[in-house]
Length: 423
Length: 165
Figure (cartoon, chains in turn cyan, orange):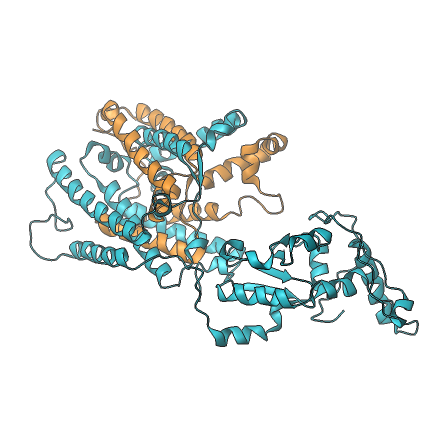
């Protein structure tokens, strides 16, 4: 099994909303348990009297960070599929400062204000109303300040990549930093808040290995392992399960027929990526509408996300099948090949043969549909004479692909039944 | 609840979101969607012409409220309520320091909320979406953001001591 489950298609959009609600319940529950429904407790952070904001936040961060690292390291979680918000450094610095001001003035942040409003705090409800006002105000002036919003784009980048520090080492450093911050926080609480460390504190006077100390030790230990355990990203040196691959190779769901692909294009489906692995010059001469050109030799890990549906084609089957094998072994999940390649595309979709005059009505109807589809893609019907003397049909004159969006007045052939193979 | 264990629980919720969904937690985005939907309902043309609203309105095939963050935030309200109810902490009240009137506190709450809305949009996220989520993914922008949130709040704390202490 591969994670993230949603991105590998384990469940759909509708179910994801139920997941969202359940995850939200967990989020809200622990925010409330942490005392974050109370603005005074939150604000105490900034007078060094009660630093639970720092403790809760950094414990949550190191828990998720260490978890993500090890789940990715063992190959269970594909870290490239976990969404990373792009960095716009100056915008985020300015936004952070404004947000910090809003935090100390209003007493909440968006998440905590929900919890506070839900537990009856009127200040939390007013805060939410203020936030909605702020959003409307921002939206109204947005057209004039749009250029300020996305300043200094650095892309989707981690500290590890930006500063060229091994990811695992950084995990260890953040864990150590957090543990040091917890000790400093407890010292500050004692000095400014007059709070003696209780049994749940790291600095509790007892020498016993309390549960909280065990947790701290566990993270320190895991962090140390992470520092030496290598990169959490999967790389180009793939480990291949040959048995599984052999089974997949004979599975017909890895194949797309020319007529099937034509249907998808006419329906305007956009849940797949059509890739032409021929050379640029061949691509320029003719390609299937909507296809992207990625010559065989330039195929790499960065081609697409591993959960994306990809359909390869080349002139015949050969290169497409090779590309299929390459990407499957790199861990791409949903890769298929256009059966028969462009050759089949031409003979089935662009130039469908006219059936003999005595063909049953069923075939005649089928042919009418094909003729409409051929016209849609700029091809013509292959005359009876060319069946008798099968000379190769001329290449279509098309050089530019049709627009990706199918016009509404496109041929309205009743959606043909999907056929697995053949014309 | 001990803050370390609450944080641990929160971290596990965040981790499960990464594993199940491939995304982290959020809050402010849901309110933006709600605001955009409301404005669209009142003044459709105005909302569609505004690049900010239209980004949150989707392609019109489904309701923009059928959104992951919207459902997640509904869960946050429910989870917070549940936890508060179980611990007997549900109470209609105003949280404030003893030296400030209710009216001033509520006015400041509204101002703070408005600033938060603006800041979150500039930063592409709030404490949930940026600090927690991006922090645990070692996101460059999130760490810069986090430091600035603490910096901004600490630098103004002295001026607002009457509100809280």
